[in-house]
Image (cartoon, rainbow, N blue to C red):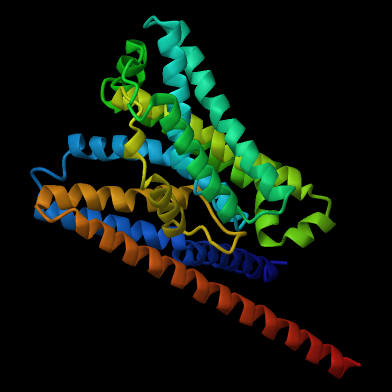
Length: 360
């Protein structure tokens, strides 16, 4: 009995160490973690170059605030890209939702929460409508997501310009701008960033732990397999694009609150910036892989680059070069990993087949 006890303890400790090592190895190999290290390196470089300006809370606060609206959009885009889809319309849906909400609030008049709440609901409903529209055409009519959302991009932006005559609506209830657009929580944290954080947390938890998130990953991994195990793929796709559209509506009202105008011409690159952030963060364009945490990290790389280039006096055009290079690298790494995983699975199957044949 006494001889067995130390042996049992040794095995237990070894098992714990192995388990910890496997967790550490998975963390190190995770693309989101590697991108996080890139982000840390970028922050350190700019902090060393301009410590008195860049490495200040006021500057980090500005970066966080500027990235907040894109973060809301990026949560919905992460779900879409996990299904191997794409949504090019989010920037235009943001504009359309903001325009409709602004016009409704202007018609109602007043600067109180009654008018503001109606505007918020109208913006979200507008986004949901276009999201469901996209999802229905993709899931039921079987039109490729690229074509559907490219068409919706043109329709929504065109309708926004028709409704306004191409002139931005600038009458926004003051309660929106003072409370959400320029408001702070605890005196230092922008309210708009707190709202974005809530959306991120809900989106991350749902993707990781809910049935909706599980079904999303299943559809992205293999639509045929998902159908065979009972997942209603068409309904799931409609829900996912509705989510993307609804969050674009939320982003529309946040943009309206932050800038006090509809900014029709200011969202031309929004969809591409969000897609780049999601892909840089480790979400695979081939579907089935993605995390909200990785998306957030991917979102801050272009935000920090833009801010750092401005502070250090580098032309901001270099940001596009840097983000493009990181994006191509991220997609290349994803392809290499998928190829390696496929090769490993194939070799494992052949080994099992060979060993089974020898036993036979």
